[in-house]
Length: 353
Picture 1 (tube, rainbow, N blue to C red):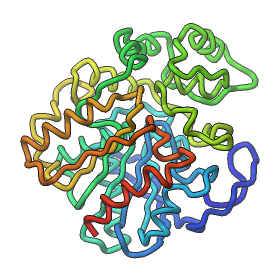
Picture 2 (cartoon, rainbow, N blue to C red; picture 1 turned 45 degrees about the vertical axis):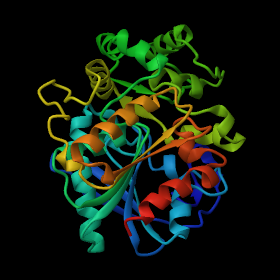
Picture 3 (cartoon, one colour; picture 1 turned 60 degrees about the horizontal axis):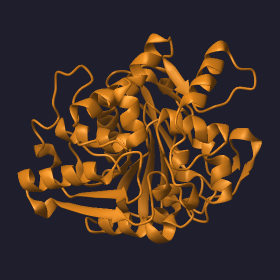
Picture 4 (cartoon, helix red, strand yellow; picture 1 turned 90 degrees about the vertical axis):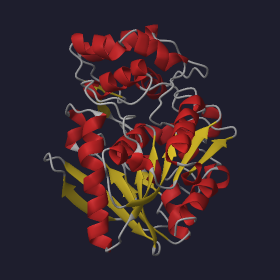
């Protein structure tokens, strides 16, 4: 979605990477997904995978002077933004699934689609938050055709901040499941149902975190995911319109996150597979980036995975970047991310072009 009218009827600024070419495809388990291509050159191709519960707008939002696809486009990259099954832009977002499904089906289908459409032998991946976890799980399961990757904020060792640890200890996702919530949404309904009113009551009881915000969207994001961004890093327009990237999310996926947090590393949702058993699939150039102030998922987690992989596969494959002054999603939507973060990621991609 580059120009025209978006959620809420507002007019978006034209993106300098132009209108995308859309590619719809189906996974081996029958789920319809989408890729949006911005071809700025022959570098890459690079797939950008957003965080859980967000659509491609997590990257293509027009509220900063330059978003990440525009930056890569202007640096000669063939950019493919990935709407996997958790994207609110797709019907699958309202269904029940786990991150095992994203790893086993979505990433292989996306990589295969890009390779087929471009003729490239391999692709590069940039994945954020829980799609970063899923990407690493996919590689552990044997995903082929990836020559380098950037993992943002989350790794095989997930270390939660205080609010997410609190939610894990309470088994909050399991409790919501028992209460009849099969999905949650960041959207605020003008005509709330009984479940909406129940959720609003729960929001009133939930801790507000280090940066309390009275906006209903920010309160819901904090309840569903944790402290997703530092408000100081957002400009006013992003704060006003970031909700466009979010939407519905399913409880089963949240239950999987709880299982991983309680196990202290990536395991399958049913507990039968430990992703640390074989990490040979991650023997490829992999750069970790993590916001210094991330209170949603702590830098200690990505650091632990970085050190484990360096020991087991060899340190020559891995690099680690702690981003000063940033938290989580603001590494991509922050008002100064074009200066502070994008060059770090792009330098890692450039190393393997």
